[in-house]
Image 1 (spheres, one colour):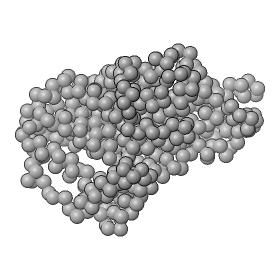
Image 2: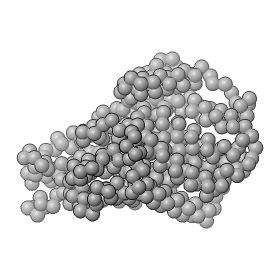
Image 3: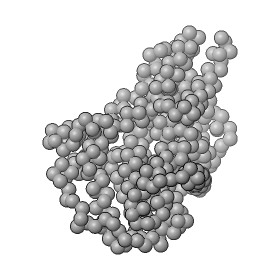
Length: 436
């Protein structure tokens, strides 16, 4: 039993690896699994009378529940509920079609527009999952209508959704703040958003050149005159989103709680089906994020996070910290979720690394971590790549050989994206020259 007590930090990390592996192999939500694993670790620790790492306080079963971030959960529910209404009543879909229709005959702008529009929708609140599903599906069907490369068009849309997802109003930006506040770090919102956007833009530009997006020539099937006008409910919904953006960014109001205010207004005015909007909330994703957070908190209490930071610090210097953390996040993202696993696991490690090395900036590290993790998220093993493949197969009957080829292509592009981001981290691009 004494040996078990001595190796609890290593055992806790092994449990995390096991949870991720089982979730990946069995395709199950690791959020619930993580909470159960955290309880088992806490139960064993109490029997062994283990103290919380760095203190003389005994670890208790109650520490499990304390690891569940209620503020994060409420914030994410509020934002996804509001934008579930905007999606359910057709506001986001019609808005996207009208913007594409404005291009007219200048269809060579379609690839650029897919990226910018997707990034914009992602940034104002829906985040990379909702915006990715909406815009990637839209992009694939539009590409078949235009008779242009559907894979490339879908990539522009998904890279855009990832690029815009770290805004202070979006799930990733909110999660970054909620994870960093307890660590004593704040005020990096604009920096994180810009670096994530820059990462997505750079690789989109590479894809634009590789797939010769500048040569797109086709007839635009969307005509502004043929699209319906925004109805009353959609106009009010857009007004509510604008008000939320102004109040949350301009007046620093709590994003999640104010989203509930705007959602309540839409419900009172009958602008959306409340029941359908509730169903559109990604409950599984939220449980996954908060559940893994519970397990990571327990690992931290047992000294596992410190063990990782100590191990990594042996292989890094102040100059190599960012690229090493970027590479770590990219590899981890290939088999797990950025928001559910990578960010909750690596943000605390980034904070500890900053304490070990003078001159290492926390904002630079989490920018490299977040951007590179999303760079890997176009892999077919992740939600982003899976959305592209499912949208393609839904729009066109696809053979097994085509699907296998698409799988390989997306995974190779994902590797390329991670490599580009690691290079950017090594060159200090994520510091933004210290301007922000």
